[in-house]
Amino acid sequence: QVQLVESGGGLVQAGGSLRLSCAASGSIFTINAMGWYRQVPGKQRELVATITSGGSTNYADSVKGRFTISRDNAKNTVYLQMNSLKPEDTAVYYCNAKPRVGFRFEYWGQGTQVTVSA
Image 1 (cartoon, one colour):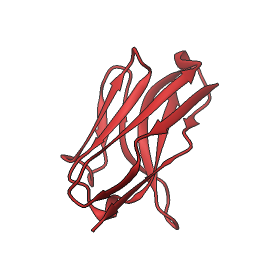
Image 2: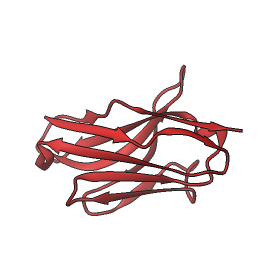
Image 3: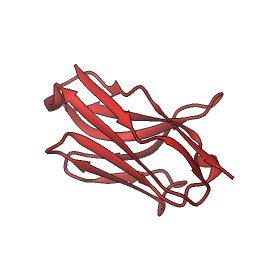
């Protein structure tokens, strides 16, 4: 089992910044890529950004150039630095951990609300 605990959400004005953190604990050896997804009511959860254990990153087009994902493997923590926030970034942000080859389970955090006011 892997536990993911998110922090750092909140309310910010458009153009502002927030930093999300996700700390992983438990069977860390079973996971590889970690990332962030977001969801608004009535819509599907969507990818924001991912990062592998080796540091390779992937971003949704809507956040490229504004968001940066990073990972501290020593602390088993992944970060999402969000700059130039827009009202359309408002969502619940979920941390995700995908399994290494040979393991089965994917894990999700409980979610943290990000609200960007116009």
